Image 1: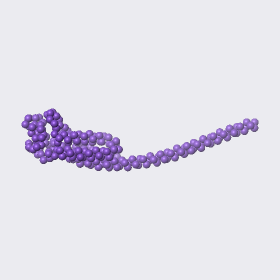
Image 2 (image 1 turned 30 degrees about the horizontal axis):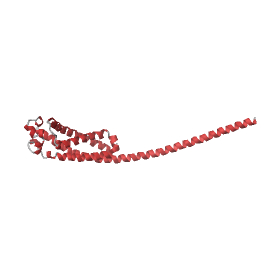
Image 3 (image 1 turned 180 degrees about the vertical axis):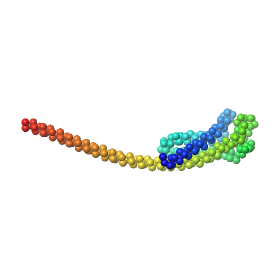
Image 4 (image 1 turned 45 degrees about the horizontal axis):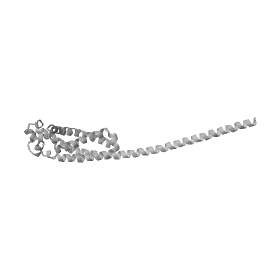
Length: 220
């Protein structure tokens, strides 16, 4: 395995380590909105969908690396697409960046969280028991998503390098197979020539034997 492939797999594992808690924390919010019969707001839903798809993609390319190596250019394009998708998710959740989770009790985001924020506290919702925890989970997901943007850009570059190295390996293999086929053709032709010569000699001997036997019969 080339150094580029080893680095690609290492960064893939690091991405999975970051994506698992992001998916877990955001899925907790999505489950809470479903249980409360409310629509999940876009600033949570967009990042949740992107992180789920990214987690599935990283697992697929990690366990099928030998197959994905042949399509490394396609893998690079998908990783670049996740860079843009994660940027979109981070932008939609940018309101959490200025939130003070130690005293999270004001602001537009506090109201927009619904059962996890102001309205949940007013209605004694079980999802709003710890408002500071809800804020911390959102901010952690937002921060990890920013790191994931950088990691997917790195794997985009590494996938291009894997594509370049694998393409060079394919060229070497083709050359070796070409030379081998030529030698095999020469050997087969030499064998065919020897067989033909052997066949001619045997025919000559058989014809000579027949003529000699005929001569004997003639003189006798």
